[in-house]
Each structure stands twice: as C-alpha cells, then as structure tokens.
Length: 151
Image (cartoon, rainbow, N blue to C red):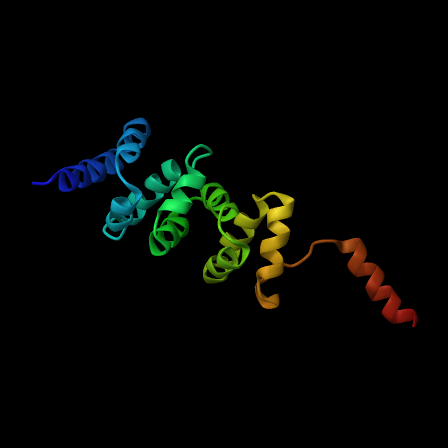
C-alpha cells in the first residue's frame, strides 16, 4: 500500500470520527493535488467536515488556489454557509456567481448575507437578474410606488 493510499484511508476515518485537530494535521501533510483526487470519493458529511477545515480563516486562500476547480466546487456545495462564504470571497466574482446560481435560493441568500459588503456587491452584480435576492428596502419601494400614483 502506498503512502497516498494510507493517507486516504486515514483521512476518511478521521472525517467519519470528526476529530478536527487531527484532520487539519493530516490535511497539512497532503498535497492539494492529491486531496483534489480524494474529494471525488467522499460522502456529504465527510465533505462538509473537510470543508470546515480547509475553508477556515487560516487555510482558505491556499485551499481555493491549490485545489482543482471541480474539487473546490464540490466542497463549496457541501460546506456550511459560513465556510462557503469564506471560500467564495477568494474566488472570482463570476465563478462565485456561477456556483451560487446552481444552489437553492435559501442557501444562496444565507451565503450572501454572510459576505462582506464589497465582495457581496461584486458577486450580486455578476449574478443574473432573476437570481439576485429581493431587496428588502420597504421605504424605497413605497416611494417609487407613490411616485407612480401621483405622476
């Protein structure tokens, strides 16, 4: 058994157990290219736990840059909203918008609400108009409505 196979088995066992500290130590030892290959075989819960470690504040930029595109997308789709938001800030706005269009509307809104204002604005501009969340500024909509009545 090769070292890569041994680490793959160890990673799956640790992801199933949920020991975050040991998962992070093992992920630090793995090359991101090897991890990209392993992501295709992981189940939903394992992906969510791996994403929680890979997309934490310290590792997120290195993880997004080093993982393959399909592995990053798969991890973002399985990640919790906070982890997915952190990962989307390090992607380009158009790529992030493409990922958000494929997600359900509730999840899309939850992820967008967790982003900082400059990044959120860029991603919102990149989203197609039908996929953008509704504005909740009631005063502004009431003003426009009144304007239509009196003109």
